[in-house]
Image 1 (cartoon, helix red, strand yellow):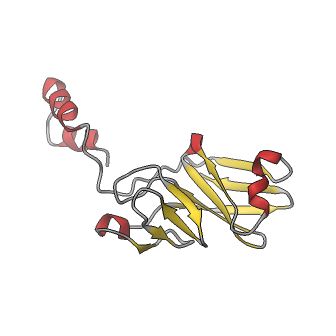
Image 2 (tube, helix red, strand yellow; image 1 turned 180 degrees about the vertical axis):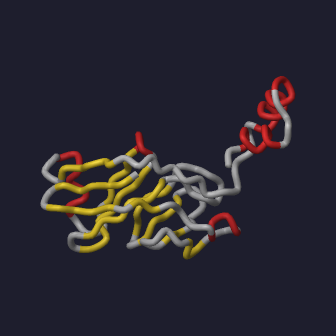
Length: 142
């Protein structure tokens, strides 16, 4: 549930809703938001901009989709959100065989489960997306 819908359900609307929303815009959600859109994103491994995905341990940040995809084994790719659940920063990369938050050094395994986190938010893990490869085409279901 979004903050806006929650406040509406409480009966807060109009000017009161605007005052509450503007007063709390700097707060971050404690929930690991689901950013899935039920669409498919494809990457072509023959495209030079995707060349980092040809090597195990290589990764690619997809800024416009707020995702990071990594080649974790021969013919196996994992895609996760870049949004770290510790403080909701877009700082997730792939490093040393795990997903890593550059801001807080929290780590997450290939299933998105927190392995080294700073608080209970990090233990919630990060969202993963089904990723398949057929030939030179990687498909990510987002």
